[in-house]
Length: 139
Image (cartoon, rainbow, N blue to C red; front, side):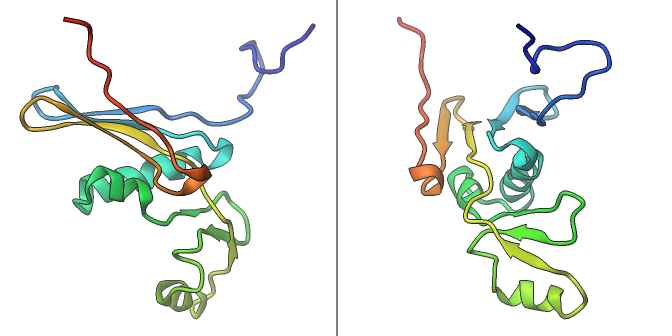
């Protein structure tokens, strides 16, 4: 039987994956995250990282923030928190076009805290909410 997801010459992946680990200048982990979602994975991970690293949102809030996804189509997909927003209206006035997507991605991540402990975070609403926890080795 031929499995289309097995790697091989001349094949292209059926979706994109981007599990991501961000290190600080001392090469210590800051945050690690990933998401399912096929073609929306890369935009989901990027927007979560942007919210957390650039906008300073707590990890759970960066995960919960509404998302957009553009994949070389005429319309950009927007989640309900962005669809119909003032920003979307401003962009429509200069020629952008949008369509509603109820949910884009489903991120889970961990953050290393300043005290060296770990904080786990997952979706609060998308796909019925997620689950995340830090599992410590047995003493």
